[in-house]
Length: 308
Image 1 (cartoon, one colour):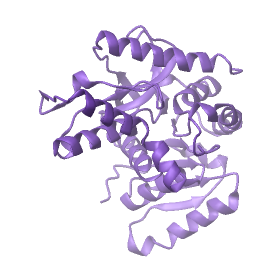
Image 2 (cartoon, rainbow, N blue to C red):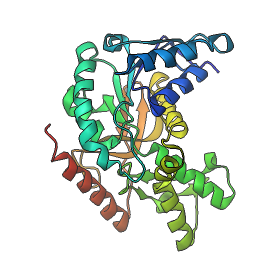
Image 3 (cartoon, rainbow, N blue to C red):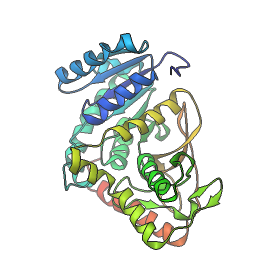
């Protein structure tokens, strides 16, 4: 269904599994007027764009092409999905050194042509690379967003729904903190229609472990995650382009948020045409607060090792 409200351009940098699947999701759902694919491997970007263009007789009127950084000039949203991918047995933090260097070049190229758009980071470790993007770009923090724990929260809701026999769209539940091993579930806020959900300790442990380890399981099985993260990115992009004001668990710069500052973490935010319009303060229990602050300190320690 075509949900465009105005002419819009999204640039996707990186045509690996995440970038390509995100492009195809936006293409099928006709979210944008113009879709540009950029990759260091220009043939790969060209092939992906050409393949989608051949489907235009079956879809709508999205204009899609393989471009270069000059095409960022008129972009509303620039998605960064480029970088080294996570290997079986590798954590997201293990990717940091390789991808931080790649981002230095990417951000320089973006800001050469664009000073008004929104940067949406999908590359892992997404929270740290969002912080790197903020510092390298000079953009205001509301216009540098990471995909955060939106996907983790979706996995969490799915697994809770499976446990309770309830459609996951009716489950309200949050994963916050790092998009990674130190993320934490907010069991105290999990509800259906405002009614708290009860779980045994065994169920809690199983649901959260399956949430946290989902990416590892998928990567071991098929080499990369792609479909659900593409849908998560589509959700963020749609909220931006349509100025929705939707509450999404994206990664954003925190300032005195439950005692945490100067780090990107996934928390519920109001997302609209300005990017992150507002960060929503959650009341955390003592144990949740300690875990959240530990997650922040872990990432701040990794950031301190970078040349920013």
